[in-house]
Length: 284
Image (cartoon, rainbow, N blue to C red; front, side, top):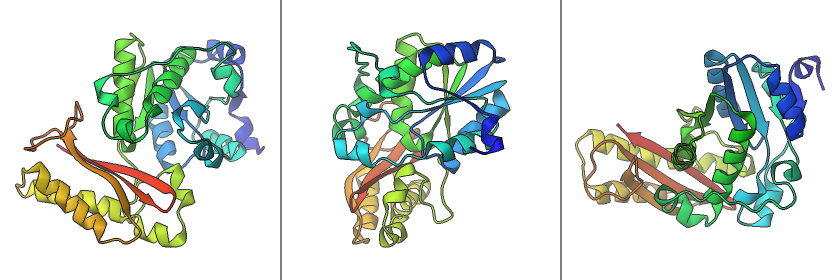
């Protein structure tokens, strides 16, 4: 570990976390992550540094939000590198627990959020949002931060977490920040590391499809079916892209629309080989 990484304290148990939090100035800004940190995570840490006295990051690959065991096994991990990134961004504390520390023996509770968790990713990945809501509820209660920061690339996740925090009377404010993109438009994601060179060249078609529909809406197109067709046609033009869904939905409820008025959300999930990418653009 380098000298800069030593400036960030790493704790691994609930007891260590409680002890460390007791000596930190408030307010606390919290950035929950599954590690393999990238520029998108940095943007969340930077916002927390700007708004809060202390920044706390969690690094925990949550087994409850993966459908297939192989997906969990293949998720990239590099804790030493991640801690160094946290130190570079002025993070005071990293919570990097083992699975048994988050879900102790006998843990038997699942947090299930309602209607907003059912379509789109909820339909495509059964059980995923139960896993997300459960781990975030645990982490929110352990850290007790004033604010927590999430990227809008995972827009539905952001809605699910806000609903969960509101319904369970968790005081942490859930802050959503804009999607960070590569120069060619591809949304930054930990999963991008799994793209082959050819797939990486092809992957920006996802954002081009969304951007084309945004432009059509800005020109006056209000038919949701027409916007869905535009996105589908753009994706069909890339042989390596295999769309799972294209959506034009109400931005608050994620119910599919017939006529599009703001606020609405364009979103899609597309596979490139074994790598599944999601992206979205708001209509505001």
